[in-house]
Image 1 (tube, rainbow, N blue to C red):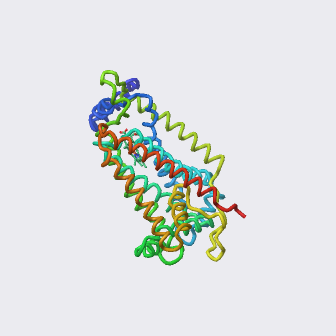
Image 2: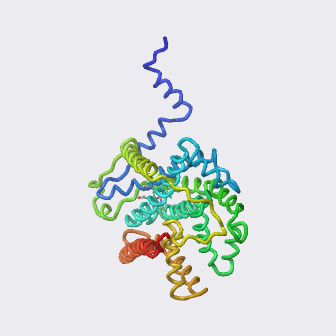
Image 3: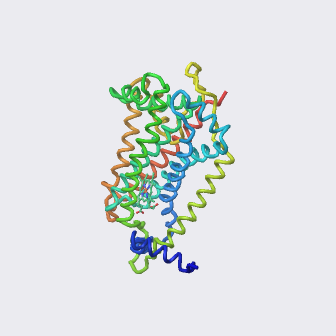
Length: 366
Ligand code: HEM
């Protein structure tokens, strides 16, 4: 009879010899996570990561039945109404995508107000902005794939935004659409973007982001920096913080399961380009700010001038947001630190106000 008590340690020993597990565990245990009254915000990067993992897993399952091109709508109808638990996988995928973008926004603003973008974490900030942009593109490209009425018209509205860029705008829109109108070619292009190009960009950028977190460790807010080192508290990343992270993932999973099961993702009628667009058509909530800014400027300055000014002010906001680490590089930077905090408040308020405003002025569904 083999000695089964010793089996786990024998397996561990066998793996350790080949993979150096003890060194990896020691490295993780070496890393410490600061503990203070703002520690709650440290979980949001991990929560975003969790939703991304769920998206990959459920996305692969959807690929088993989804067919891009002319049959796109029919295949999603089959997933939703005929395949066992197909509706649940689809609903989980769509909810996870929305929750991922939402938690990435929470993570971005929390790292912003904790000033985690400061030296030497500038590249964490920039890679994070890249990840958020890619996450939004994941959402935009995925939205069209079912090719139902809402997806069709919302994508039409969405593609009108890059179309307003002077000179190259219409060319970009045509390239993305695969012609002057949304068609089966557009679905093929969006599908390639959604399952090949975006993952190929997102995953290496995510690895870079996480490697930088490993290199620099977690930043501490200014209130902690003011304390002498002996008074600062911290816990080992492994196993203490990792277990807390896991508990957060469990809560995130519960929220996701509840939303996906209680509010299943709907599928409208098949898109009919000859029908007029529904009155309340609008892009996904995370594009509402850009949509609303374009609308406001369009109302103030009719024609191309309004489009240009709307696009210019939106892009100016994005560029300023990206270069904040250069203006507020260290915690001893005094007035720039305070200005950056006010700028963060302004940006948060601008996003909230334009999003709520955008929804408030939508015409009611007939
Ligand atoms: C969209 C996908 C993203 C994923 C999966 C992700 C993941 C993570 C993880 C796991 C951490 C370490 C724990 C934490 O602070 O929460 C982290 C840290 C960080 N992330 Fe992200 N992140 C993403 C997007 C962003 C965005 C949009 C920004 C800002 C523009 C950003 C900026 C940062 C910064 C500055 C840190 C360092 C925090 C510190 O040192 O206190 N990340 N990220």
